[in-house]
Image (cartoon, rainbow over all chains, first blue to last red; front, top):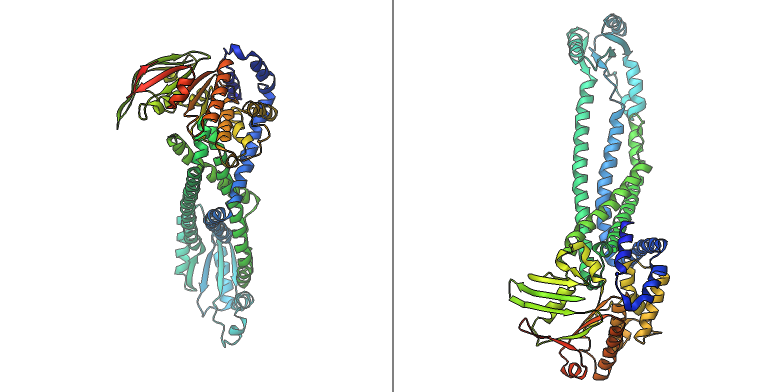
Length: 340
Length: 218
């Protein structure tokens, strides 16, 4: 608004005695505030559509640039969604702090029950669950997909397992470890294993994967920024004549920049939308095999797609990178573009 | 309207291109700027267009010292001037209408005002009816008149022309000079860089002559 007023003052130099009639007309027709606001809005609308028109006018160049960008952006969002899915996989393990006791082969079901009861007496234990050999075998048959192979075995190879759930395990790591050691000493126990260790290992692997994905996304974002910047630089070079003429007839840098910024926006926007389609297509291809694989295990895993907010963020960030990339180039280049 | 006070322009490579140039063109005054090639005509015009700043001295446009104007305000200074070039500097991929409308679009005028003013400017240079043509479809003289229409459409108080008749035959040149005379009569200050001696002697206007960067007659 400030700028509109400035234009208005400057367009009517105070002293122009010989052209009084013209000055009056300027005030009534051209100087009207609403008119100026409309003109400003029209300029933006024109820049928005003409820059899109230019992209369509040179389809080959546009498609090449946008394809490169779309692949870079879909790589970035692909890694993101991969990490999200892996997190979902480990998410339901986070609360698990149970200790699994694999009993010796010579311990009978009755002995195991007795041992379980003795553990229940322990003050730091909340609950104990007994899984007999037969139960374990049945479970394994159902979920592992090796049913036929197991039927061929003469003897059940699975041990009796006690799943011990300690009290407040997460807060008291040392206590937990002492408990684990005491179990390890018992003659009935073959192997005592703390699930938490596995969860922790898995979690640190996940943290590493997240960090890796973040670093990769930053790098790919940088690549997108530079590709768009370079595209705009070439465009500016091709239209140098136009820029020079506009400067000569009194265009401000922001006027000259506007269509180029919109070009950057469109390139980013279209690349973002294309990247969404690429990622979604890839995931549709992967969905069946992944869910089949997950069905062979616990079956609780469903492939997560980019949700609405993530899609908005994807397209928003792509468009934003387009604008920022072009802007950085324009700021530098326009200062160095002077008519000969 | 255009005032130079001891203006010197020095380039690191070539040394002084303009030396102690002083002159004053008043409102409604018309003058030729002449001199052999390399005498500094183009440099002087570039200084007026605020494309460059002088090394020493003072340039006043419409009473405003160019030295005191910030870089981002220069476009607004340029809007007070209409520039006409030997090579017309038209946008080949835009129609005559769009070319002439450019200064008005830049200045933020509304549709109706733009259409009205462009028509008036084209009428003044006798190009009515050619709005929708592209520059390449026009003759040299017509293209030059499009350039003139663009320079005056914003009704600037100053018009600066760089060899405006350089590519035109004598008859067309005369026509163009007549147009400049008309602008002068409504109070516009006109500065025409030219080495067309016959044209200059024929018209009895003020002549600023540059020789090796110095003003030898004004």
